[in-house]
Amino acid sequence: MREEYITVLKERRTEIFEKKSRFIANVKNITSEEAAVEYLEGIKKLYWDATHNVYAYYIGGESVIQKCSDDGEPSGTAGVPVLEAIRKEGIEDVIVVVTRYFGGTLLGTGGLVRAYSRCAREGIIPAGVVKRILCSKVNMKLDYTLLGKLNSLIAESGYKTIEVNYADLVDIYVAIPVNNISKFNTQISELTAGSIHVTEVDKDYYIIKEAHK
Image (cartoon, rainbow, N blue to C red; front, top):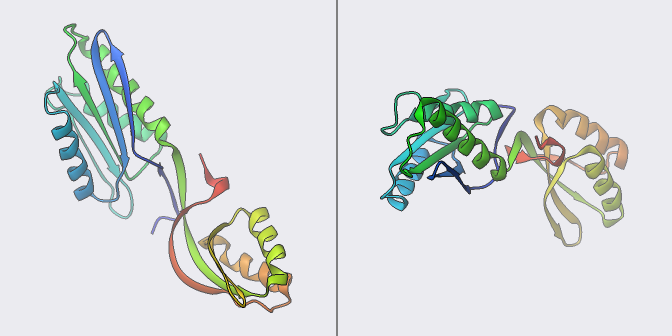
């Protein structure tokens, strides 16, 4: 599994105009090629009357999948520039669809490349470029007297509290980057004189505050 990767936080739609042509970038986080195709089909239905629906997607992991399409624009002037915009930001697990409504003025090869690149870039940035880090989700049950110390440790170390339940004891779940789990266990042992047991529940990707790009 990837220890970390950069992706977009949310779905976003951005619109620009270039010599009366309307360009609309739709950006979304996806984790499979099936999800990319499904999203693309939805965009095509939404903009059924568009001149072109150009797309590119990049899915990371053990087997990288990257595809793009000019959708009728001159070869290399649309899909590749969108894919290059994705690569330039270093993001993975994302699809960018740039829809064009022709405005009556030809842009030429260079103009098309610039327009599609700009639209893709201006669509990606507002979607929130973030870093997801592979973390161990850990559980701890502790006395209320220790909660203040634990919260300070979590805040100072940049860990992420996922869930807190209050009963006879505080039942708390925290995301710890996998590379820091040994350090965290030592910190907890020293902080509480070994009175808190740390249980690793599972592993998943989380956005850690200090990890934003």
